[in-house]
Image (cartoon, rainbow, N blue to C red; front, top):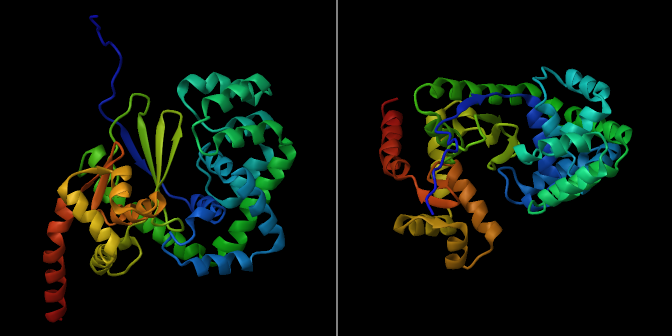
Amino acid sequence: MNVIDMSFKRTSYEVEVKYSILYECVLGIAMITYPKLKGKLEKSESYWEHLRNSLSESLDAELQYCQEHNTWKILLQLLHTQDFDSLPSFLAFLANVSNQQLVYHALPFLEESQQHVREAASKGDKDAFSQMILASRQHNFFPNLIHFISEVDQDELRRHLICLMNGWFLEVIEKDKEETKRILKKDFEEKQRMMNKVSAEEFVQWATGEEYKPETNISKVLLIPHYIYSPWTIHANLEGMKVFYYPVSQTSLSDEPDVALLAQFYKALGDEKRLKIIKLLHQKDRSLKDLTDILGIGKTTVHHHLVILRSAQIIKMRDSTYSLVHHTLSTLKPKLLEFLQEEDNK
């Protein structure tokens, strides 16, 4: 059969970087209500346990509710409706947005073909909710989230979102707010300086450690730095947009960026399993399943090590396949020698 392909294939995308302490707030809520992340974050497990135990009973109750229903995802999607300049402006939006718009933005974006169904569901169409649940059945938690949204009282959802956001901000974010803002701004400025020096694809890979090729329905890639969820990158899809919530660079956390970069590299190398992964990828590119089968350890553990190696830009991922970034490894020794010589000359 002869086929003429007249479909549109996108060959590029626009990139934007933005930052806000409000995203940091929501990602913190997401992190602390995801038990599988215990022991897989930059800060120690004991730190997070101490933090959780220090929270008020009222906030802990909201976090329990969030953990049961993944309402952090609703907050994250609502944050993307406009650029909020402060917590009060976002809370005012939550208090005054119409019920239909609240439900519409609470429902996850699935794909363009499902947008009319999402719209119908926001108007209370039970069949539309069922269609969305069916369409998202392969996702980890979207079916349960959609079912929850279809059943929850909208005033109760609104109250919960306001109390959760306000409580976490006041009890967790507020005390380190200015330092967190400084870190996020520093990373944002670092990315702005690099943005026009390389192609969009090269920039996304440099900023996130991930290789992202253009997709037909994606015209824009939005990059949002975070500190609290490090070293993990979170992906999300919005209408016509791919979002990467990526960990700030080590250079954004230090007054001595060269030292911080070297420390990140050698920290990534300072583990036997990660060294084995590097050796396996030196032989050839491999998938997560390949690495898991060869190493004989759990998929989650292997993925954790891969995240650390990607954060140090030692490896990259494309189409679920991991490969070495040879340039990073080849420059490690020269950078270390340069650092040592600089110290000797002081």
